[in-house]
Amino acid sequence: MIQVDHVYHDYEGKGIYAVSDISFTVQSGKVFGFLGPSGAGKSTVQNIMTGLLPVQRGEVRYDQYSVKALRTKFFNRIGVSFEQPNVYARLTGYENLKYFAALFSAPTCDPMELLDSVGLREAANKKAGEYSKGMRQRLTLARALLNKPEYLFLDEPTSGLDPATAASVRELIKAQRDRGAAVFLTTHNMELADSLCDTVAFLYGGKIAAMDSPDALKRRYGKRLVTVAYQEGESERVAAFDMDHREALVAFLAQNNPITIHSQEATLEEIFLLVTGKELTA
Amino acid sequence: MRGLLALIIQDFKRLLTNALFWVITASLVVIILVINFALPQRVTQEQYRLVTNHATLSGELATVADSEDEIRQAVEAGNTIGLMRKADGSITVFHPQLSAKTVHALMVTIANATPVHVQVESIHEGGRIVPFNKRMTPIFICFEALVIGFILGGALMLSEKEEGTFRALRVSPMGVDRYILSKTVLFSLIAVLYALLMAWFSVGFDFPALGFILLSFFGAAIFSLLGLAFTSLFKDLSSWFFSMAFVLSINMLPVMAYMEPSFSPLWIRVIPSYTIIFAYESILFGAEGITVAATLTLAGWCIGAYALSRAAVGASLLARGRR
Image 1 (spheres, rainbow over the protein chains, first blue to last red):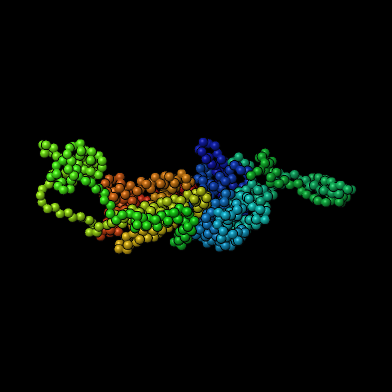
Image 2 (image 1 turned 60 degrees about the horizontal axis):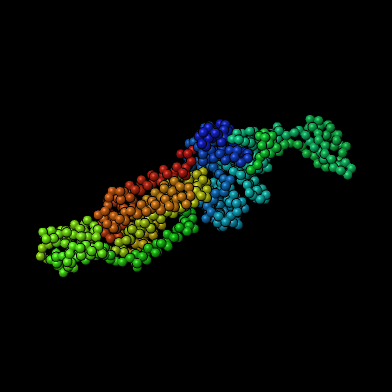
């Protein structure tokens, strides 16, 4: 479990906080989604959590251990995938993983199997400098999984990936969650967050604007309406029904020929707009 | 240990793709060729004729001049020392900015001029006269083979910063000790190989190999560690390169003391290459090997360089949140 308590960060020391009063918990075997537009402070929080930035105020704990007192060997237990793919350009994909595997004193995965799982087996012996951005992104993800981490940090893991590859990465993240890892997912991709996250937090202007499970947020901010598209003569029409008046809906369905029926729950994107007043863009 | 070896192997693979590595390797061959075929075996440093107005001063070796003006003109023309005896018996020496040592020797010779037999004997440490070209070998080893870690260690570290992999290392269990040890051991091993090749092809095999290998390994380790500490101050190759060249040129100043041993001020002796060059000279051409003083000095440099590198690289590699 990762516990973040009232964390603040001021880059210039002038009292202007990039993030302020950030508190949340990432449970083992769960995916926590940190959602927000560019510049919201997502990476700042991740960097504080991974020790790349110092904790100026507040506390970050891995189980009972403060991030301020983590020793080198603790990093056998975490995996970090950065938004900007950072790999050894002059080593092959396989050599990149071998290099990092040598750093861990904990058991590591077979590099070739990992490359296979991110769709890079064919390119395993190609120099990473010759990879496309999407391939380097997948290599960075594979590197983060090398040590079967207990705490996994993923920063925009599907950014720049084609839909098929993004889907396979999604399955990979689910597999990490299912084996018990605490996954901290930073993204502005609402679809990804919706399908993967047990809890999401909306970060805007360095503060958490809303936080809950995607379903709870949808229920809280969505409309309790059902829309029915139906055929009337030659044309297609739509009728809306309040969920609290189910009898009207049942009577309508009995008398008409419905084509589609949809509940009008809000998307995470719409909720973000509702909560922050701003659209969620990259 | 297994992890360290794996890191060394992967760093070596990265090195093989580095153009600078191949430039240094090619220059190794060029230096061996220069020592053996381009540099002369003997260099006459001062060759002057004498001009005097009094033939008895230097006998048949001197050219006789008629006046002081003629002597002055001959000296100004170059490669000439003038000796002028005045009417009162005193002697004035005109010389083209000779060293104080040479002028003093000349004055003593003139003052003690007596009709006795003079025997000349050249005294040399260890009883061997070392040809000039071979004598250059310690210099080339020190400033080519040994500084390879200073240059290439820095280049590898900066490529890690530029590629962003340094950031990935910061969230790995790498640790500063493993980082600097893996690079230092790699470059020290390469330096030993290069130093041996230069020594074998330049002066032959007649020197104590173990002492030579140890000197090369730890000498290169000192430069690698200092190089990593120095490079940690920079973010990219372009800002680092000229500063690196400046530091290496300062490191070469002890060459002056090697060529002119009487010139060994303290500020030259504290440069690490000073001890290393003379230790190489002692191993390759001397009889006694490395002195205890040199060994202690090098050990001190190793410990100091490691502490400095650990502090400097640690500040960059390890985040402030970590211990």
